[in-house]
Amino acid sequence: MGRAEKPLDPDAGPLPRFAHGLRELRRIAGSPTYRAMAARAGYSAPTLSGAATGERLPSLPVTLAYVEVCGGPREEWERRWHALADALSARPVAADDDEPAPYRGLARYGTEDGALFFGRDQLVADLVALVREHRFVAVVGASGSGKSSLLRAGLVRELRGLGERDGRPAALRICTPGPTPLRTHAALLEPVPGDADTVLVVDQFEEVFTLCRDAAERAEFIGRLLPARAPADARPADGPRLRVVIAVRADFYGRCTDHHGLVDALNAATLLVGPLSPEQVREAVVKPAAAGRLVVERALTARIVADVAREPGALPLMSHALLELWRRRRSRTLTLEAYEAIGGVQGAVAHTAEEVFAGFTARRTALARGLLLRLITPGEGTPDTRRPAARAELAGSEEAEQVLEALVRARLLTVDGTGVDLTHEALITAWPRLRDWVEGDRERMRLQRRLTRSAGEWEELGRDPGALYRGARLLAARDTFLTADGPAPDLTPLEREFLTVSVRTGRFVQPALVRLRRFVRSRWWLVFRLAVLCAVVLWTVWFLNRDHP
Image (tube, rainbow, N blue to C red; front, side, top):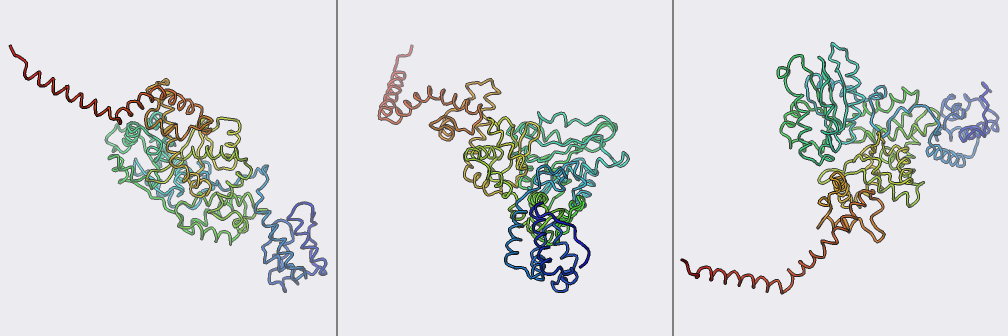
């Protein structure tokens, strides 16, 4: 009969219960040895034995082969297998599982994640060599190509590992421009005193175009970066130096040509980041799992390679799918069944997001909609981009705060200090619900961005009445954001007050403007103009014919 199997408790969970049922079939069939079963089933004895351990769900073909050689009902066990597969695929690992995930989902790989960053070895080496050779380097690639991870888990980690004789920097600094790049990061633009260079990494450089509205500050910030390109003999030999690395989205590369000095810098040293090759995708899937002592089914690896390889912008979607597979792992195995259950690479983000929204009431869904749309800047001739916002701008009530926390727990949003951001721009296109919201509210979003800026400027100017909305802007804002019940609920307290005061002030001005407009359109306007013309003619005749001394 062979070696005795470990006892199973069918009440310990669905997997042990399934395996216990298989063992019962074998017992009823007379307890044949697994070697004898293998001769009839076409699968090896260890494979059939492993199907009844209760540690993981066997594949459907193996299950059916086991059932058939034991004389069990095939259709019934096929239904049981699919039901269990669906349950396991939809069930994340318990929240108290403190085992670290080997994948980062939509979040970028940080400087501490270098041990899990695979598939970009050659690109990292090329970037390090470029940075050591040039003082100003640009990294250009599509959204989702992994530029941020390349900088942090690749470049920064490698530079920190250099010896002093190999050119280790005196300091490594990382920033994103934000709406006020010069005022926010002025201190980072000063190199650390000493012989070694200071390396400044400016990630998401496109924010100088999408978030910074002050053209003068934008130009000055760029101007402060460019001196890093000065040749060594342009500064004292013992003076501190700055090396700059910027990462910019490919669709904003053309905007860089607006600055002449930036064009010269980009022409001198630019690294293009493309999609992963099939072999690089395989590394990015399998090697982090191996580091976490996990197994990835070969069929799953092949499927992900087919879905992702050479696809621009697919890396965050792949990483998110892998994280969800890790949360739904069977014992220590990532499975193809779970991958298909979450919709694959393209559907994983939407699957996660919709799981969150399934628990929202209609009111919380509306709050989430307003919150998410505030974190997006609608493109004007360019793709939509994410827009970081202050937490105070998003969570104006206890319920809004709870909605925000739910989206953060689902890794759809990232909180950094007091700021909130979409975890990745891939959300905008990969999540149908959000994509439809953006398309339906595009013009309203543009008006709201302007209202947010105008309200902030009004506050900065001490609530100067001259900064209030008037004319066409007031009418557009009033028609869009004022309802019978007052200002729209998704406005912040400052925006509501700004709009209310603008409308109240506008009421005193509007009647006079309306009377003037009506007068201009009436027949009395023609009479008035004729009277003025006659007066001018009479005065001219009098002036020409008066007596001169």
